[in-house]
Length: 292
Image (spheres, one colour):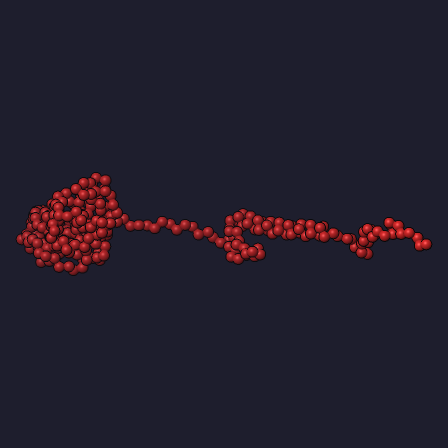
């Protein structure tokens, strides 16, 4: 009879495979772990490289280089590049007399508002010359539905050592506005003025006082708009001509007219046309130019 099969003869062999000659067997889990460690090391090395580049740039006083996704420089700034200082503040010239624009209804004290533009030239006339000393005193300004009327008093004083003869005074009133050329507003463009007064002569040291009015049609006023307000900034312009010996001389003077300061500022204030007809007795003037 054939011999009986035993359990050891029928069971499959569980012995481990023999390693290949000259090598070491590596399981799949161990290989994956090694690969992960290598990846983490590479990432750490890249982060360390970028960090050291930023530290080097800070210590040199420059800027860290901008890099792309691969760590390559895109627009690196050299460490020796100078830093550009902040631009100095712009120098703004001192303005000519300016005006707040808000006068409350009922004639109360006005609130301070942005100033209205006025001609920026300020040139005082010489005191000791063959020119008569010209002093304007504005008395009042009235606004009606038709005209704006400035009532004034003029005083001319002869400061020259000789008599002045045949003194003629002409003039007008216009509205100051930023859209008009400065020379035109000041009467320095050869403007023709309406005759106002004539004085036969003024002795040396003598003064002569005269009074008059300047009228401007309301329709001819170019107002300065500030919100709902319509502002009027009058310019009174006078041309004085005279004879000193055989010479004939002339001078144009431009005066800014406005409401007297309210105590918080020394600036004249404009007139509001949107308040309707009214009389303004408390007014003053500023000499803008005296052009001979």
